[in-house]
Image (cartoon, rainbow, N blue to C red):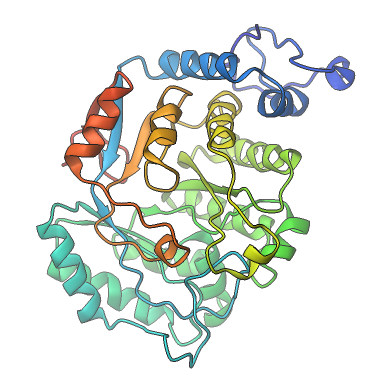
Length: 372
């Protein structure tokens, strides 16, 4: 059995390059690329889950799993990036296109807050008529209507797009939003941080390096962010490991990532569904959760989601190294448009967490416990 690795110093032993499976990793060393790939592809699933669970309990010994009460009222579905995996976006001028006014958005947030939401995740793609002024208007309208709710807006790729639209550096756009009191950024738009894959699934979106650079800029300004991974499309296992390694290197420099959140591609009615007919098997999700816990040794939290996968896969993820169960979404549109629209209640989420042997605890977008 391979021992878990907990050091924060990157190492790699070239003697492992020719190993067939499960090369040894000594205590005090990190998992290198080859070891990480073997974890993902070859390690017996039960052993892998056990290693990851042990690493999770060493880092977070309290038997708690967090969740957040949130809402995701996409303020527009207009996006000119036209990623092939997305069934939600509509091009400018499309009869189904919409853009909410700040007042309309605030009303949706009010309804969600009355239902218990403590956080609003605010994303809307790359709408060519939405400028920085509109972003600020949305933030101010929500804050005026719901001063207690945490606003968690705009992904790194949205910042890259907005900077190009406004003809200013990404850092300046982020500084303007930081001045509005925003302190967290969701990790959307990462997809897969390998450019030859990105060019096939999102040819007009920010490059892998632009996503990483925007995240690093955010960390330098004092934002705390998350990092995502979309898998189960045209990527190979090696691409997933590249993605994890790039995240780990950035986290070594900045320490600004709060959590890692993988989710599987949902074909739905997207253009990519012509090439990828079905989503990834839940076992792949569990392997990614466990591998991430072991490889991303500098990430505080790993999320396993009842929503993006299935409740049963989400629960298994909690036994494979994850310590967070994601959000109890009051409103969500992107995955619903892809034909994936599970729903749940707070009581159900708490019961699922308990079924894995953990105590459910509410958190906020900073992963502070007890923020209900």
